Amino acid sequence: MGRLVVVSNRIADPRKTAAGGLAVALAEVLNNTGGMWFGWSGKIVDHSEVDDVHLEHAGPVKLAMVDLSKADHDAFYLGYSNGVLWPVFHYRLDLADFDAGYIAGYRRVNQLFARKLLPLLREDDVIWVHDYHLIPLAAELRALGCTQRIGFFLHIPLPPPLMLAAIPGHDWLIRALFAYDLVGFQSESDLDHFARYVESEAHAQRLEDQRWRAFGRTVHAGAFPIGIDVQEFEQLAAGAEATDMYERMKREYYRRKLLVGVDRLDYSKGLPQRMRAFREFLAKNPELRSSATLIQIASPSRENVEAYTDILHELESLCGSINGNFGELDWMPVRYIHRTVPRARLPGLYKASRVALVTPLRDGMNLVAKEFLAAQDEEDPGVLVLSRFAGAAEQLKEALLVNPYDTEGTATAILLALQMPLEERRERHQALMRSVRQYDVHWWCESFLGALAEARAEEKGTSWLRL
Image (cartoon, rainbow, N blue to C red):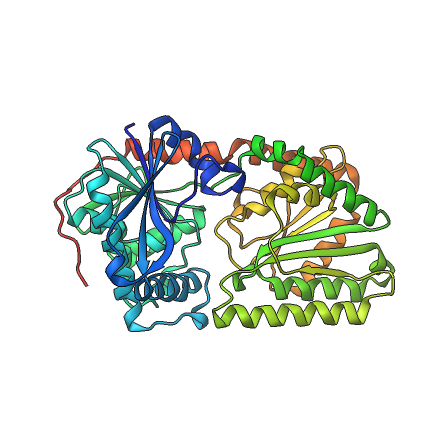
């Protein structure tokens, strides 16, 4: 394989892997190939200043960044990416804002990325584009004459065909995926939605080896569930900050069992539903009320968007009412934290917790579930309560799988988790960790790039649809 070129909305320094995310996954291959990471700088500037590509070096890796004007940022990022694609892809048509101007800004920024990236490319580069912000990037690159092998990975869910078809311009959006040589999804469910859409809406021909042909091109598609760097996370768990957090939690809550939830504040995470289930658990099990405490961390996220303000107020109201109705002078059932907790401390919190509540209404994967498992003491592990609507549920079948919309069912699962015998906890944890270790982040990276290397670039001269 030639040099790896990673393209994403935001970039990360591959030397700072402690931040987690894509930096952990891609650091090794970027460093080994002397690769390049291209994306938005995070800066919003006057339109006249959107010109230069800012270049930096992180060891052998080149970081290439472009600025955005406020108009482009608002239409591309706030408007189309997070106002249309994010809610629809998470099954929330009611929250989507189908303003006609947003798609033009989305297309405009993808064209900007293509124009600025093309001169930086080498003939043997392999390009890996990430996530929903940049779905049409390959089509824009192809229109400029790019012939390099290009792969795309969607980190969030892909909805069923009828829901996807609610997006104005959905046909153009999915047609753009055929400019890639390989399209990767988090789960088999997402892959199935893609196949059903392209076959029913685009009349694509299904070929062997997970290939589909339409619009004069053949695209390979597959499920590549992302994992964590288990060794890196175990080292983090052995660090001073995680150890201090674990010891503090054990001292403070020595009489109680901890439940933990760690999420971004987002309507896809099912936080109000989780609180209602915990309230139901407390109401139905009065003898256990003072023996369990839920620590819910909800990191700030897009607080200038109305939908996020609404869920913040709802969550605060629910936490307050639970504490008011069930709390005692020496015990509050919910400790709600609306800020980001340093990643280095989280393994200690996970290890000190008997139960993790990972109950999104819809999620591409959810790596909190896998990190919780990796942080556990194998001799006395905690229990994972996992939404069946998280991508991780396809792999982590030994967790207690729940329907987050079912308040009573989730409350019952919380009770089962808190009362689960040690032997059963060990057996479940061992089985879950086999999957977490086998399908780690290095497997994800290697399997995707291996499939991309085998994909055959075809019909490079196709003329792509213009808006």
